[in-house]
Amino acid sequence: MRLRLKYSKKILRFVKVVFWFTTGAFLALVLISSFGLFLYQKTYENKIYPGVYIGDFDVSGKTKQDTQNFLDNRNSSIKNSDFVLTSDYGIATISAGQIDFGYNNPLLTNQAYLIGRSGNFISDLSLVIQSYLSGVYLSPSYSYNQNKLLNLIQPISQKIEKQPVDALFTVVNNKVTAFKLSENGQTLDSDTLDDKILSYAASILNSKTPQTITLAIPIKIIEPNITTEKVNKLGIKELIGTGHSLFFHSIPGRVFNVNLAANRLSGILVAPGDTFSFDQALGDISAFSGYKQAYIIQNGHTVLGDGGGVCQVSTTLFRAILDAGLPIVERHAHAYRVGYYEEDSPPGIDATVFSPTVDLKFKNTTGNYILIQSQVDLDNLSLVFNLYGTKDGRQVTETVPVVTNQTPPPPDLYQDDPTLPVGTINQTDFAAWGADVSFTRTVTQNGKQIIFDKFISDYQPWQAVYLRGTKQ
Image 1: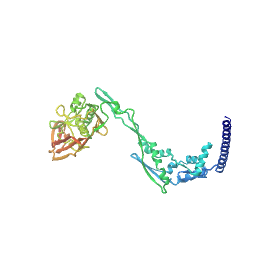
Image 2: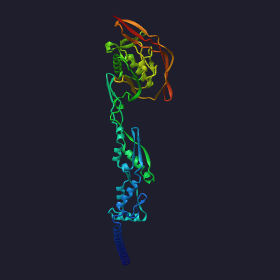
Image 3: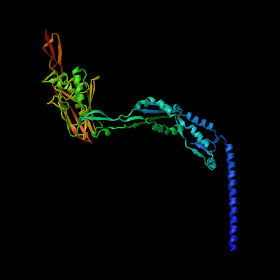
Image 4: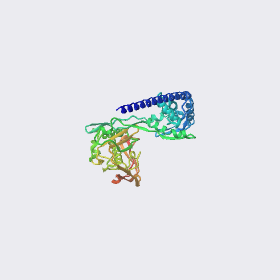
């Protein structure tokens, strides 16, 4: 028992000796280290510690001002490098010097100087030893003046800028009275442009000659709050076909009738599987329904009649139906070549109507509703029909109309008219060459032909007719 107690006291005494020796050694080490760090810091006061690198550049012992001057010189060496920013809205060539492009001087200088100066003894000592023995390497940081860049490309960014458009779709009595497709807006994507420009910093700064970097200006798409798909469940979301025509030199009554008929057809919905009838959709064409007199073809003659000009509307709609790749159930060519329909089109792409026997019809085989919309420009005397629905992969190919068997018009015919004063001559028919005109249309879907049409127009030679006044 006495031996065990004596042995325990010896162990305790030994532990105390070791503890106080270790503590003393540790305190001495801390004191020496602190004193050494203090002397080191005084030696490199206002200077970057040895072994600190910015990228591959040794900035040991440099003052902050020396480091800034060094980085400024590096930035100055690449001021003639250019960024060529391209877009569909313009091109801008901007030098690195114009936008202060290069090393992020203040940040890197401050980071390098603060190595070993955090105020935390253990951390500072560790970094000082590490930098002295193996080096501390700071990753280069790059920057440029984004405000200067945006100011320089402002003429382009203003053209890029586009506000989104919300969809509009109002139906009254099964007819669309207000319609507008939603449109995405867009703006310059400055964040992506920033990333792209800075990604070339290392290669430009490491090059010994000025560089030219070509970049496409990134554009950010802005979606509208209300899309076309949200405002209707009919499958009307995009343009599927368009047709246009001009009607220069039309008399006022004809212009009025074109505008009236086109607007009455605008907004009509054609259900999936239904066959659209022009005559049925337009209804009565007479003075009772608001039409004025203009020239029409009747019984082989051009005469004044109610609704003259409606065939301008049917012809334009026919062109939109062709473009949409829809099956045409009924179509008739005019008796002779009418100059209005060849103002912006080859001959043979026209469609006449005369209710109730001569009609223009097509079938909606798209599986979704089709909306008919017209646009009449009374200043430029042009008419456009747009068909909206859902595209189903149809591809349309039309051949150029072939004109054959051309026949000159008969000699001019003068007819006496006792209702006109003597010396007055009015032209009621205009000369036109006769011809056979044909063209074909092929519609494919998913690589398979689903429609093949051949449209043949047998235009008769037409005689110019003049009324000669005989009234005394």
